[in-house]
Image (tube, rainbow over all chains, first blue to last red; front, side, top):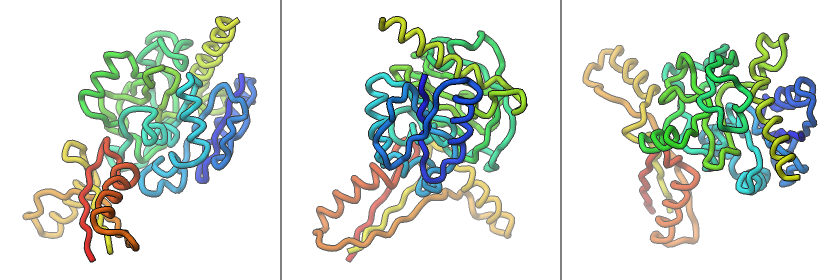
Length: 227
Length: 80
């Protein structure tokens, strides 16, 4: 499987994502430059964490106008896997690929720590290899990670089983403890925690591997179904 | 011609920064400050357009770029 990691000016988890996918998961990974429109035949595009365009205007607001995002939108519309992590999640909500928005943490502080997450559904390419009820130990590092949406949107997300991850203990005030959500087609997922930063024992946790392993497994079954 | 655009969080969205500012103002001896909402302000200079066109264009830009309609609302004033 080939992962494409988008590099925006101000991305700072691009190498982490690249390292997780290639060195730790053993798959191909390439960087995709923000001003190029080529996705280099990636099977999954990762929008990494960081501060794209300095978080100017709003987190993720400027990134949505970059040439690579036009290609990412098209790729997503065709069913391609797109995973937004942290700032990547903010970009996905800003460009309308995912519902809701990420606002300043309830306690105003930038929070950098390990949290516990549960997969809120097994029915997604990002969570299918995660055992039901398992608590994943994965770090967060954000100042604006409080997930908000109106009640109708939250009800719709729950009714359609589109909440991907929930915090066991809500660190930032996110409504309904939501840590990650899926799009309608379930091929686009955004989450504030950093699974790529928990992919080998040296990092303190390997639980983030399960997110990547879910994707790799989904991609493999998609390939065999196509044959 | 100048367009002034005020972007604020919707009333339904919690504004923890505004609350913190309010507490600071209260602690300075101003108990009359009952609520603070923080927002953004844009000043845009325009040339070669009439007011009606400017109003329509600014509304579109405020909606598409300067604000995030999921969490924010905006007000536009055009002068000059």
